[in-house]
Image 1 (cartoon, rainbow, N blue to C red):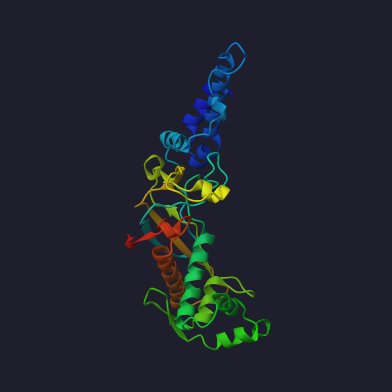
Image 2 (spheres, rainbow, N blue to C red):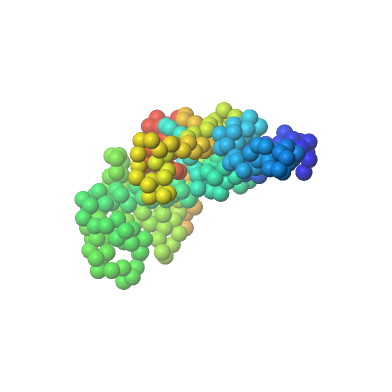
Length: 318
């Protein structure tokens, strides 16, 4: 593909995912080709290259990320969720957010973009798993940590008592009629049945839908930034060499979302059978509380132990 055609493509694209994962690569590959032609002409009398061939150099991750931020345009927002009983709330990132760092990428460290809209998002299954984990930890706390969380999950997920172990049956009878959500004073009544209604069991599906979460307003040229990991003892991890102060650090750049970006989270209810309005409202409210506690105290995405992926304690809007 010619340079002019590549530039035309890059100037027209408004899908950040397409630019980051596909089209921007073409510009760098074309640059490699031009550098190859130049070095082939610059030979000494013995036919050896005078300079180092640029193709042998790694792509500088920071250059790739900066070029991406320079060329990316603001995409169209996704459509609004309709047709369900909905509970919505907004939180903002309390620190940087990195989603999908392990995805394949031209610069090694990837990023998760929506496959249609091309914007960053948090998958609904990730949010559901986070809320589910908060619920299980809340039960663990209610029974004072006497049992393994995996056993508690077995009890909550299996409705037929004949299918669970004797140990699990013993746990079932120790779960109180009321529990408080961990790190919060919100009370859940009849937690076993509530868990199964929200998240489902082996016999039935959950009735609360955790939708993907999107930024409320997104400007990719402003909201993305280049972040850095800087491991100091690479040889120690790769070649069993003793760690020492004279070893050189290895900066690794990657793409991240900035602090302070507002996301909207949406929960829907698709009841298996008719419910009273009060029960619908209670299930959605409970699911929301579980998710909020998880987002504020545990975070989502990569590098959570470093503070990434946590959301602010202050709810924006509603």
